[in-house]
Length: 265
Image (spheres, rainbow, N blue to C red):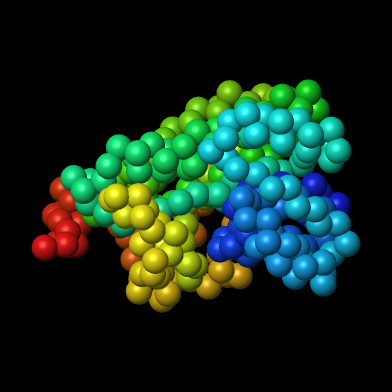
């Protein structure tokens, strides 16, 4: 599959994996539509992409506002249809024990990571169904395969995405629409900087495991290989996370015992 001339809408494109995918796709000749809440950061990514491509548009979007999602999708489809590939990268992480996390934080994480993603999918899907063509890509996490301490609501939101898009994949297969779920492990991004702690404040620092993780350009290339192959699912990670997924499936009791050792004292 060539990305030349393909219209690719990326959410969460202002930083991290979303920005990495934007840079890589711009080098491969895609027509990019970049969304996030921070318009200034989007403009920075757009400028970097324009060094390699001619067609890069920014579409500010707050996924927590369902009405804005609906209106923005309608306006975007009116101006830029057809959307060939929709890549969901927007999300927020968590660093807090479940018992210390207030309900508002639980709901905020689900609103951004799950409900906003589903709302945008629902808004774009009819246009793909009408064409009998399209590709939905959702960047979840290895946390959508297994749970680990300090990430209860984050992991729940990623599990929810897996359930939703696994069902959707089966439902739209006969309509010519592909669905790819991407499960990154530790990737060298700043996602934990804006992660929620229990009271709703931000974590404000980068985890050591992330800073030692896979570089973003390598992650982006691996994701795009999976998209090009229309793979139903891909794990993009180092060997440690892959082993954990394997243990969760075949030796769950062993994995649960190992995970307990990482609970903060």
